[in-house]
Figure 1 (cartoon, one colour):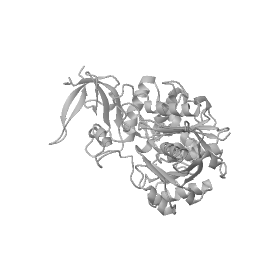
Figure 2 (tube, helix red, strand yellow):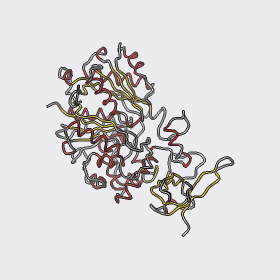
Figure 3 (cartoon, rainbow over the protein chains, first blue to last red):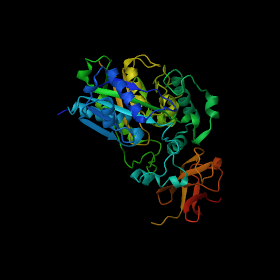
Figure 4 (tube, one colour):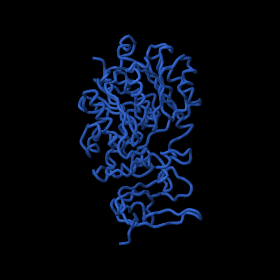
Length: 390
Length: 79
């Protein structure tokens, strides 16, 4: 029996559409374009793809993507719930399927018109009754119905308990936009901000300002993953999956786990960190760069602590002084993140991590041998560590 | 178990955007830790948003929203 997934599989192809505020075409069209691009990047034929994974909230069925591209047979397909937590979970699914021989090559994708189509910004109201709707129904009557509001509640408690100042959030916002300004694919390409811009930006939900929030986008990203053995014969430098994990912790709701004793930490992040480190045999000190899910600036603080880059309550100091810059101690969100490249529910994080392993990021730090990628905040998240072949 | 309706502010936010019809902004939403040990999420009324503090004592105030709806809101405890 297979006892470890470490280095069993590798991401061998990535593809994406342009990122925009209005794509002018259907989500299915975006999905087809990015999956096709990823397969071509991998140097594989359409007939090599026999598995597909996406999120439950993606509107393009696996069979529709297969049919649209002319992929003849799928032996594996599955979906991950909870939206933003699921991007890296797609890799988790694919690794299990490939390493157990259920299929040979999987395309994972997420394509959305998140700006011109259904926006997530307004929050939750109506829709079919689900368990998520039931727990949110305790908050929406009071006007707490957006992801920004839910995240702000944790952020406020964190700032209170650890004496964190808005300066730490500003530092993350400014650094991430500096990365995006250098990235022609980013919505915020060419647009840096300074502290004055940050502090004069309007409140969304205090303590979060406009520049603490991600940029809604239209676009799609896809990756192709296969066995490490197969990857040796393909054109791209493989990004080996050293470890990959999902987590749902005690008393978990979707972004609103407000009844836990301590709201200054997110135990579901601890869970995925522990699993990734155990599988890979690596620790925080071995990681050269990180793509941390940043729909909101404060999400980065919680993750830095769970993944052990600093101690509890220390992330707000850790980020100061350029730590997260391309030349800093922990280059982070080198593509501009969800904050400023595009909010695509974390799927673009995978593409950037692969570029870092290949050495081709627009903000490439020296020596990116191991890269952490996470998705989700407040939801059941996922994370993985990618590494170079030795 | 009956609640006394008394508690304190465990965390809070001030909602500015996006606005929904039927609410007055800026809107204070708080996690109230009730004396009995559980929590409830509600609005704080009768206080300016900038004067809300972590840990401040608050008490229940049933408020009529419209002809069909009443909601359990919270006010600062009078000093």
